[in-house]
Image (cartoon, rainbow, N blue to C red):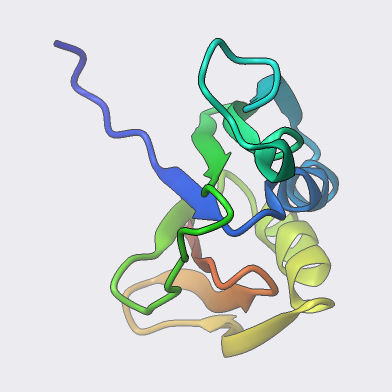
Length: 136
């Protein structure tokens, strides 16, 4: 078993849009993407263009993505967030600037009492991102 956790984000028919957004924000790449229609899986016509599985990567950031079937629903909540640790102040600033444009800023990018620069942002897809840069 690998000692790693991989976030898996589920969307309600807009996974392609979300992947394109994350590709732009994080300057990463979609490693693979398959629709329900391309899979060997019984699929109703209205689900053929939905994503059954995709993978996104930018350096150490890696997550998987899929859509639901049309009759299933996604409930977005605040019970999970994704923490991104940055190696530079310029890196966190760049991602924060890109994310905040189409998101709800839950905590502005700021210096913290624990010696980090930190922000919390809920993007337009309901995913909560904790951005953290620990200062030396």
